[in-house]
Length: 247
Ligand SMILES: NC(=O)c1ccc[n+]([C@@H]2O[C@H](COP(=O)([O-])OP(=O)(O)OC[C@H]3O[C@@H](n4cnc5c(N)ncnc54)[C@H](OP(=O)(O)O)[C@@H]3O)[C@@H](O)[C@H]2O)c1
Image 1 (cartoon, rainbow, N blue to C red):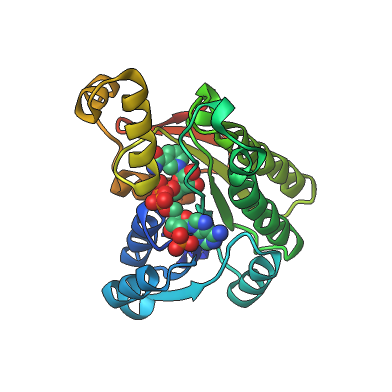
Image 2: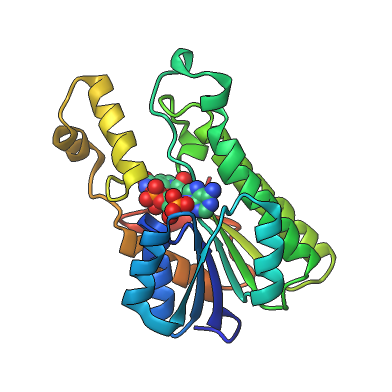
């Protein structure tokens, strides 16, 4: 754990990848602030992790929340993980409102927090890691605007990296593109929808896709990226086999 990584903020920490990331960071010695809307999820994580974890019950897509938490915590590591579960339906069964859900949550929150990180600015050596998705590369035909939203998360991260470099801020911005995995609520719903679409059981679908990425592997990838080097690529695919530069 680098010195700057000792103070971390993780959005979407109440369950799934975010919970595993907060747990791994606390285990590595960081003071972690976790943001989510579900009080019970955050309270149980606080009970597990003790005083190394500070829960904040809030909407991560609210610009005031982003500004307040960046100002109060000045994180050396900011993990922008919060994301909405898309409604798993083919395109014609989406309305504009269901299609754009991930723009309203995932993209909006990455936009606000990234902007605050640049404007603060966070200290030199700080790292901002955003959760994009393998869907940003491959598409996700049963997830409405999800894949496009996640591609935009990757773009925002790359734009911020270049602004940080132009201004000599020393803040590293990296996006992580995990493969679809059934180990979280969001992933399980998508896997069930794709299996149903093909008329096969979830188990048969998963047999074809190979070993499932675990939440602990996602958390370890975040720790590895946080400790990674300045000159590395700005975006990484993550599968059960590990990290690789994203195409
Ligand atoms: N699982 C996969 O297969 C997969 C693959 C690629 C990328 N991802 C990405 O990884 C990230 C985590 O996904 P996951 O699979 O762990 O999903 P998850 O289990 O559904 O967890 C999502 C987390 O985001 C939080 N969240 C959602 N809206 C929020 C808001 N407005 N404000 C604050 N927190 C909010 C949720 O907390 P509350 O509901 O308590 O607010 C929850 O903690 C997402 O960005 C997702 O798109 C997942």
